[in-house]
Length: 334
Ligand SMILES: NC(=O)c1ccc[n+]([C@@H]2O[C@H](COP(=O)([O-])OP(=O)(O)OC[C@H]3O[C@@H](n4cnc5c(N)ncnc54)[C@H](OP(=O)(O)O)[C@@H]3O)[C@@H](O)[C@H]2O)c1
Image (tube, rainbow, N blue to C red; front, top):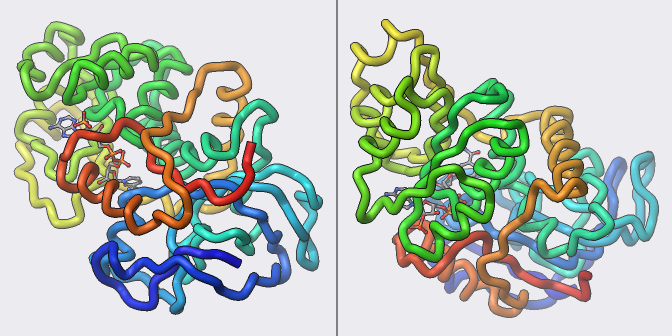
């Protein structure tokens, strides 16, 4: 089968596209005929060697998958051949990735694809949607009517946070870096979309929510807690999920006397059951028209190295040419 893989960590050029043996589904696994695989910053960190995780070479890249069940392994109960499925959490913690014509995936990490959702969109929402859901609801305990702020509302995680917070009746403010991306944030439902390059974000947030922000969903790798913590409401929750090397200053006087909380998490620590609960809400919101995955730029599997270079330039180096997800289109998905 054709696959995008690496034999060693390094720059995007280490990604090769070529023939690898088709995997056999083991106990509890299904063999997915992959139609789309989505890329995330974690793929860049793993491929470059920045994040140490057990890798067996050749290591197939990409965490997010959508396709059709081709074959089921022993003991599988959830799916049958021909079912459309999507999921995340592959390529991590010793598992192979999914940027290949076929992937053997534990069925506990897969969910049914809504009938009207194309496979490239199903893959595009996987990791970022589950991450947005965990942060807002499991950690942020968001309630209807509360105020959410998420920087990067046109980004992978941010676009999901905006839509999910609106789906449960929150008021949502966000920020992006161009008029087109601000318009996208508004289309996704944001009540307030600010240009972080030209506007005074703290001042505008104080106008929007004079009593403060209930859930600040921080997506930036260099969060400025000296600015953001004082903008939280009493009992406000600060979600931290990016910036492994960051060492922000924490203004304690604005934090503990107002019963605020800092909540950090990584989605790959969530159990299959926890992730399944996120996926169930996502499927319902897709079917109800409240959630729309955003594809920024599709690439063919053969251009996997170019796709990672493009993601790296944008998500890590701020090139500003991406809104939404980078997706590898592998086969004949809908
Ligand atoms: N902990 C976890 O489980 C987990 C899961 C997923 C992702 N992450 C991490 O979360 C981070 C975001 O991931 P992603 O996939 O959403 O990345 P992304 O798609 O590149 O989104 C980043 C967003 O940040 C915006 N942005 C850049 N500078 C900004 C600023 N100064 N103020 C406000 N917004 C700004 C960008 O907007 P413009 O394009 O308009 O500049 C873009 O929308 C990454 O560091 C990733 O590693 C962690």
